[in-house]
Length: 504
Image (spheres, one colour):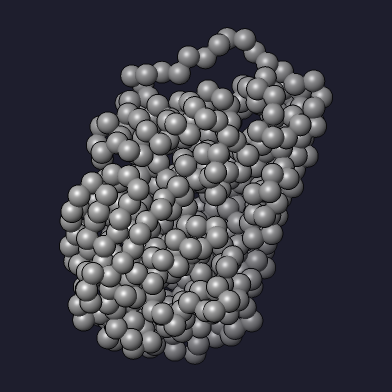
């Protein structure tokens, strides 16, 4: 929905200064702007720079998906239903065998043709990668081509979610030339989407051009220029000054300086979460984890930082998953009334600047936890500079804005990644045989009510250990200039520009 605004006392001079981060030294003359219009180019201010050179085997895959350059076998509808993309149909032959029919007449951007062998190659590269894409945590497949346009996948268990797993952007199908001998994946001119990635300029920008041989409807614009602007104030300024046409994640604090008609609020399956390091000297102690959880005042954070444009978290899964709360209400967690306090224990909380609200949240968390007896230091950097330390368990706690259904439209993969003993994104260094068993059980359930019930039961087991403290569920503000039509406002952050996006 469109955003209403209220007056805030903010510095226009600061935002104007920060907008220079976006233009990267380019001229902003009227002649340049006219040329952009004539070329039908959309300029996008992306929130985070790539971490792995835009490899689809990392979270960078979601950029490739948002730019409509890399495609998967299966698409996920707005209702999280699997539907055809590069595969036209599929069937489960027996409990552990699936067959997918590959779309004919599809060309990669380098001119080679899509067939079963290229699909097998991409999926096998993902299976063999280290670390594996999140969606493949705990998954072992045998993938082979039955003929030129039929791919068979054999699983180790009856997996009702398999078609949805294949919709993950991290399982995009690229041409063989993308996969280098040294293990790197270079997606330049390697996808099948309506836009071909033509330039990768490190952590500065990327350029895409319309692919006229696209198998579907041709794109309505000629090119996309994506520039990485980690500073939220600079992103907002770029939209306000006309330097960007589409902006990811406009900070709440900048709303008052923007045109209301250019701001759209998107309810997100994204939870602002404080991960407690279960192996740190302090938070290895259950009592101190509980003391930290009891110290949190969610309403203060939501009102002060998000100006009430967020929802208080009662669990890991928020209002974007409408089925979660009714099940949770039917089986409420039992809380003991005993209050816990710290006794001067020192902790360090890490977080990052890419999402403008997180440093502000961290400051409030510091105040709240110090009031409960902790001594708190903050370590705040850009995400690319702090991720390795976070994964290595170098913080007592880490504040993260976490998408909960990013990969398959189903939260089990996220929960396995973050809370299973062997999870690839286990920031809390958490390991519980009971939780692992609950997650395995949930993953074996068919889609529908049984699976949803099992997911909420697993969530309860995670929360009763105080392994993590969910704070709030976000609503992201997407900025679009009035000359843009049909930009995608995707809660799962998979789509931003597609072949139907156009400019006046």
